[in-house]
Length: 155
Image 1 (cartoon, rainbow, N blue to C red):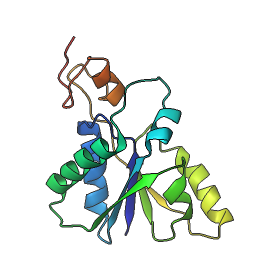
Image 2: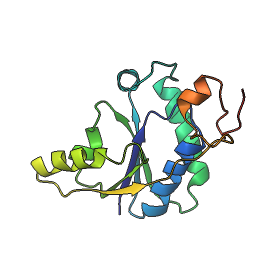
Image 3: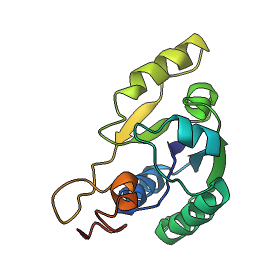
Image 4: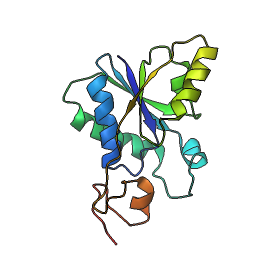
């Protein structure tokens, strides 16, 4: 199975590492890690916040994936320039790793794939990683100074 995982991934945290680990675990035929372009990263924020530039995010994600890749999976890194980008039009993708928050988007992705005469993709739902306060770790919480990348509460 060729598995994709996509996101902004900045700042990087243990929740992201959990997504990467799921992709690597199930991606025996390879893994695609797609990072949003700088423009798309800004467009897709529900709350405006500082986001590391694309090259910095790619470097951090590349290092994190290398550390987690105990399966020696082939990993390809790509830039996402639109919301559905690779998931809707890459016939080699069999599954997409999602969080509980993004799992409902699989229906729209598969509708788009069907319109392109592509097979639907499966979803692999990776659970949230919680901070010490019981709330999920997020890049927004890190930027606000609420937690660190591993979920330690800072306030």
